[in-house]
Structures are given as C-alpha cells and as structure tokens.
Image (cartoon, rainbow, N blue to C red):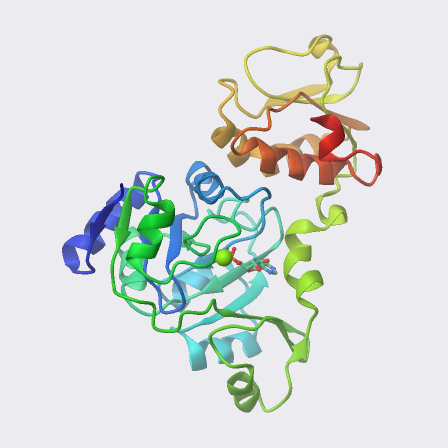
Length: 329
Ligand code: AMP
Ligand code: MG
C-alpha cells in the first residue's frame, strides 16, 4: 500500500524528499495522474518501467516547473517559445532538441537527441520546483491498462509498487497531453490530447501537420534503425571473440572475456534496474571505441530484463534481421 497524502505544503515537501531518494511518487496533473521519478536519476527512471511492467523503453515526457528549467535542457526555437508562452502551464508537450551533456538521464529520452517537455498545472509544478529537477512521468497505470485519473484508481493499480500518492481529486482534463513538434515552418501534431488541435491552430494561424501516430510517436522509441549502433551486435554471447567490445552483465564472465578490446559491465551485481540505467550510455560508449562487434552477455528476461532485451534485439536487428526475442529466450 502506498502512502496517500493531499496537496498541502507538507505533501509537497514529502513528495520532493521521496523523489530525491530515487523513489516513485504518483502525482496529480491536470491531464492524468503521473508516475513520477527524478529525471536525472537513471535507476529511478528505470523503476518507472519496472512498476508499469512496460516491455520496452519508450521516451517519457519530462515535466518542468517553468520555462527557465526547460531552457536548461532543451533548445527552444522562437515558434516553440510562442506556444510555450501561450499554453504553459497546461496540457501541451513540446518535442525539442535536447542540449548536450545535461543532467537528464539518457533513459528518459530512450537515447534520442530530442526531449518531450511539459509544464503541468497544479501541485506538480510546486513539487518540481522544490526538487529543482525535472520529473519523468508517464501515466500512472500498469502497461496496457487505462491511465489513472484519480488517487484511488492509482492506488488500486500501482499501490503495491510505489511509495507515495498525492490525492488532488479527479484529474481536470482526464486525457493525456497534446504533443507537438516544430519542424521548420511546420508544426507537427504527434499526439492529439487534452489541448484541442483547433486551439493551437487558431493561435499559430495555420493547420497542424498531422503525423501518423505510429510512425511519429511509437517510432522514436521503437524503430530498429534509431537503436542501431555502428558496430554489429551479437547477443546472448557465451564466448567472446578477440577484438570484440564486451557488454557484460552480472558477476560471472563469458569465456574469452579477456580477449575483448574493451568491456563495460551493465551491473556487476546482476541488478536489472542498474543495468537498465546504464544501457543507453554503455552501448554508446562501446560503439564509440570502434570495435566491429559489440558482444552482449545473456541478460535474464524477468522484470526489466524484458525491456533491456527488447532494446538489445533492436540494436542487433539490422544485422541479424531474423533474430527475435523469442529465438534468444
Ligand atoms: P507516456 O509514456 O504515456 O508519457 O507517453 C509519452 C509519449 O511521448 C509517447 O507517445 C512518446 O513516444 C512521446 N515522446 C516522448 N519523447 C518523445 C520524443 N523525444 N520524440 C517524440 N515523441 C516523444
Ligand atoms: Mg499511458
């Protein structure tokens, strides 16, 4: 059972403390209840996927308390800035170029170089300001279930897996945020949501470019090519070959590990949450070393292992097109 509090000053302080400890808090926003984690803490973000039981890592919306916090992390073009000034705080998410070397953990954007940012109305903004860090927060519900729009609904679904729920009554909008992306002169609608497209169109004085949901929204997190490193990727490796870069997992090494040109261990202890937090960064680092192949030790399929393996299969996909998760299980 999660602890349930209201939205007074003490609740805001408590939420900020719990989040700073790397734990999850369900917070009310005007759209739906969010399952929030400190966006700069990789293991905390990994535990969002764990609590939701999501079988893959998709990019999450990052919530900020104000425009200056958004500017710390993203490059804001003039058109996006006008939309922000008109509609924040509110149910509008903007996809923006992510600045290099920010504190946002790579798992939040699923390794993309863009970031989805939003400033929510209500108590969430106060919590973010108190924490002074953005919150990664998808809807507070188990993967595949409908979004939580009240504290009892969230408690019912996720209560056993989260530390704290703040109760602000039923969500005002009850729909996810509208996601847009400014692309040159065009403004793309990536996901319709709680802010009507017509309201945005009336403001910008032109039509939004409707982008196919599956390609625009799912693709950033799903597309094989996005995940493809320059190196080939060999999965489920029990024997390392000379010159390969080794992505290890757990305390026991594959045979021939000493022949690897370089190696990084996702989690010496075999902790899947730690491994999830290291995955995007370690893949990139090994890829940069220039080995022809990244050899990946077997990673179990329980808990976050499913999403980790999903990500690795995508990285390997362009070179081993016939290999599926089923085959390497
Ligand atoms: P949820 O997981 O319910 O919070 O949904 C977040 C939505 O935002 C998903 O549909 C994501 O694909 C989308 N999203 C997040 N970050 C990005 C991004 N950088 N580019 C495009 N879409 C994004
Ligand atoms: Mg959702």
